[in-house]
Length: 362
Ligand code: ADP
Image 1 (cartoon, rainbow, N blue to C red):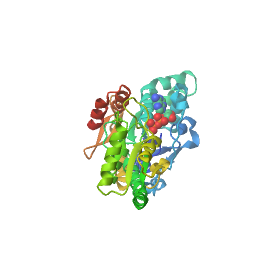
Image 2: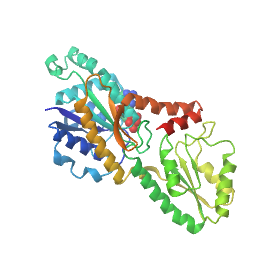
Image 3: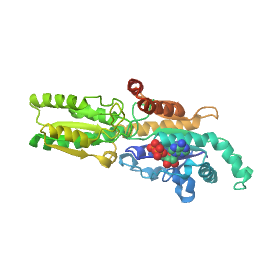
Image 4: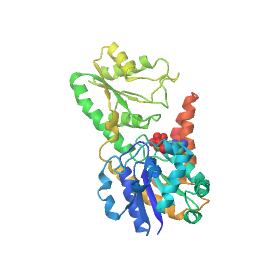
């Protein structure tokens, strides 16, 4: 029987469990065996008990659980070739030659590198007498399939990453809570949101909560933003609004690439006479039950990932499973990662129009 491994890696995201469940059950449905790799690449490098067979009932209840029940970790060893050689050995010892990874762009880049190196890693294992030629012979190729698990919605080529809609819902709930107290006291709140270099969570939360002003990395604050923000806030107040909500992404910058901080914004609003508080949402945004959308997305994508494993040939590039215009599709993993990096590069080069164009194209 073919053995397929499934792993969650990088930052946790609600919905990751749904993808593990779908991969395990779709694998079993197709007469394969499913193995969970615990604690991301750490589990692959450590091997042994960290790689466990999963039966149909082992993933019962996974769909509605937040975070990742099989654990995730950042793994330094896997960044080095020696660590990847040990990982290859552990996979062969378990008879696994296909891996579905749910993680961010770092995890997916590592996975594709692993696949490219696989034949030479096996040669080295034989040379060093860690494995016998007959042990490695049946495992000529490694299949890699990526699923994007990230609350940030920061990967190009997919409209939504697993976890982003749960996080957005959580942010909206939190802002609703702040809202009632803000209105009662006519206060201003500066809310800091996650998203690393991506403004999607902030932009969508701004739309969904009707906030007064937002700051995102892709459209840096232009010179004079302080006055501009105050003008808008005052206009809203003049129209009878009793509260002010400004949302700032953790990666927010100005056109000189200096960070725009919640404290700076608070000082400006306070200076204009508004009683202003800062709320940093922090890890609340990652937690809790997955929203319906993430349960659906992770399930459909997990099913597609197993199909992709079973249809893969040595020539097909590693795919990443995406959602484009409401359809589950496969895209070349490396291209998706490369396009994602282009956005960060455009921001670094201060080519903000290009950054926005690239994000729009997503
Ligand atoms: P994310 O997947 O959320 O982007 P990281 O960038 O921290 O998170 O990556 C998670 C793990 O993936 C790392 O700890 C490392 O083990 C592995 N990894 C990331 N980038 C690479 C790489 N270029 N080569 C090999 N492994 C990598």
